[in-house]
Length: 420
Image 1 (tube, helix red, strand yellow):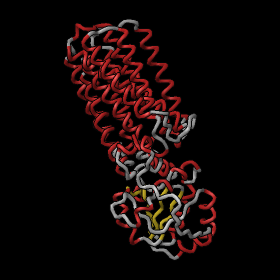
Image 2 (cartoon, helix red, strand yellow):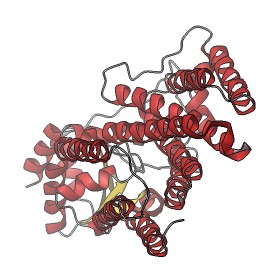
Image 3 (spheres, one colour):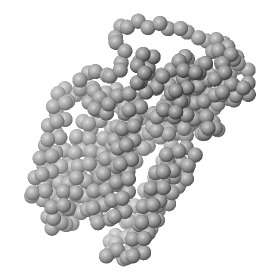
Image 4 (cartoon, rainbow, N blue to C red):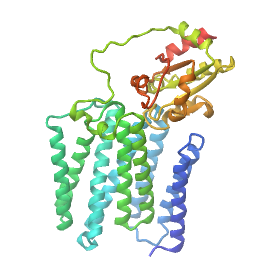
């Protein structure tokens, strides 16, 4: 029986997690939201040692917490901001794998004595946790360019994936009917293989969407493990992560202008929705730094569209300097932030915040889209993957551009010099 004080602490931690998610919804409060979530996790961990639960191998537990905390702290401190999506994928995979291993341990400890619901949630945690682990590792390898970022389609990949999925479900049912350890091992292996097959066909800018989906899967695995362990806090936290991850996945897919099914399974059909037809001739007008400086000098309103190329070139400070020059001359300047401009939602906001760009100038896609028609110049900087050419004729397209010039730090510096 959990003590009353521990239940109240868990309630307070659950509130902190909710406030953390709320804080992460805005760049202004993101730092506070992160701190609230970290405090909640710390309080929940420390409180567990005083609830009267028998903890065996206490030295190993404390040692594991210390080692894990050091690795997490050092990794987060040293990672480059442009590599943040890879770190998110890796940490997400670790969370899913941990949930799956916990379910295995509980199954070995309790087995069939736990009842039908216990067996169901144990099996569910093993499957989802294993899929999240192996899938997240593949996304990490893709984003880190350890393996190719292009979609990988193996021969008969579609049918092999379906076969593995059916086999996974079959062994899951078998395990619930006849709990045996060797069935657990086979189920874990099949789930790990399915996670790899699930992510391999995804490539390019679609990988962050899969990371968000796998993050939702990890949340569901944690929620299911909360039932297995009888821990209400894990159930609440996992449900929050699962729900928010699912919503975020839907919003990212919508922002990319493609249905989620096309993102996940488009490689099998060999089609990419929204791509320009091969061999189609399109007019191209080149413009140098001096030309762009003249256009900016005669403009009344300018929108800057930064993207992942800007982040890789570390050109956010140079872009801010250009914006400051424009602002000093009385020109209105806004930044159009695509939801996945930095590969992950909020990523570009953080990059620009590091360059001291005012939050007021950062406009989300839905907010800024109506202003493009009344804007004199739109400068697209390293964001070709965010610009949708179909938007010129399709008014339902996610983002609309008027005039665009692509470039990175070299072009931005030249423009700044020419303009000043």
